[in-house]
Image (tube, rainbow, N blue to C red; front, side, top):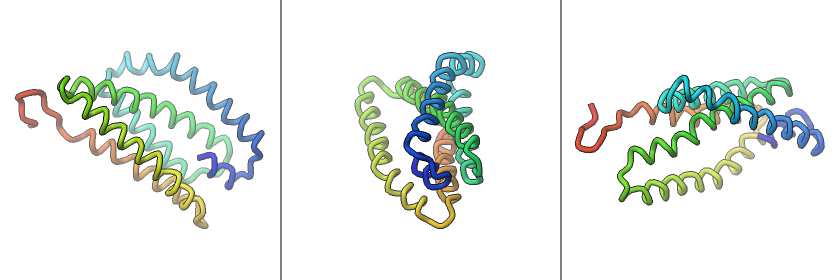
Length: 163
């Protein structure tokens, strides 16, 4: 996202650093004050879906972003969505998996994260190099739709088949 903002708005390193510091402070406040309230009101499962929906909305907005203030709001929304989804997802997965399969689940999760950390910069920089930066947001939004679809797959508890 920093490459996107730099190419779209021509930020200097100092301007980008100041903006990211502001976003970081706001994100910290969200994690301390807003996230606990969301999880209390919605519970784990609904907060997870809420987080996915916020990420999808933010990345969809990124496709049409024209102003710097929009980038700030989008970044804050992405962090809120990530806090509500990724942080909770690990806890929910650990409740769903047998103790003996916990290591396999953690390893699989780490592998998926590692692959994304390798592929995302390559794909992202290619998308930014295209004449229309909207592709970056469109691909991010499309990719963020996957966890929402996966979360809709019925899960089953031990000994109970999925309905």
